[in-house]
Length: 335
Image (tube, rainbow, N blue to C red):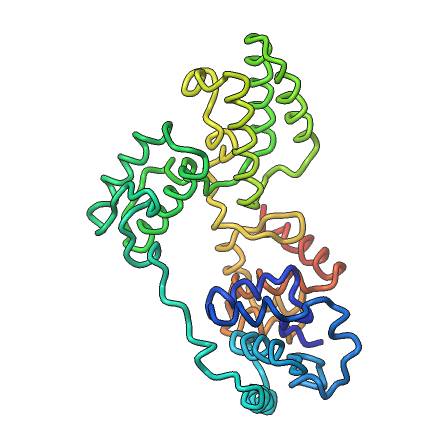
């Protein structure tokens, strides 16, 4: 079975999002392409640049452009398929300029401010990082949940690029650590009690939120879900008049949600479990060959060491039984 990813098998279109970030001009083609699975089911094999595998559809200009994009980041594509894609692109008038890579974002290269839209927390050089971090921590309580997350994320990225150490708790303040659901539940209980003492009708809302995090997975990993949760807690805190307790009886919403010291970028999702990326890199090639088969193992570990970014893209495309088996086998290494 070939596990090259294209638009016909891109689970959640995670790879497509990466493509349009890398090749911004490709975004227009993606918006105008029909990406419904039924679009590909009725196509004849000669509508694909790789007929034998029914990969890389070329029946429209939009899909041809997307197929060329997917082929550029695929681990291995036969020369004949590449030639077919080039020919189709030429026919549709799709020029190489479509695949010019985006310039490095300002935040990754030379950020002027941690909050560019507000021109706050200047970081024009690595020497500014400690000063920006101190200012960020001092003004933290005055920032909105969204600004805390944005400024903190930019600070961590800039410091990492220039190898400047940060205070251990800064990632937590920035919203870049995992959420322990049991700790979150406890803080919701504390808020419910504080709201009852304040005779706020929102005490039941906090209690309900606590109950929702009973008998669930131990961690919340998805940052979008975490930020939504922090925003919801922030809104309830303000309506219940609990913000005066921050730093004494209660943690801020960001600290309540991002309540562990475990950096989320050190982990990846495998089924319902979380696996340490560094641990994955230490697992021998024979494991991946036995668990996924030689072809997929070659794709995820071309040099003998697993490429966690490639693995993260491929796992969602695996059959459910194979994903479940992989999760079980990795559990032994996660101990």
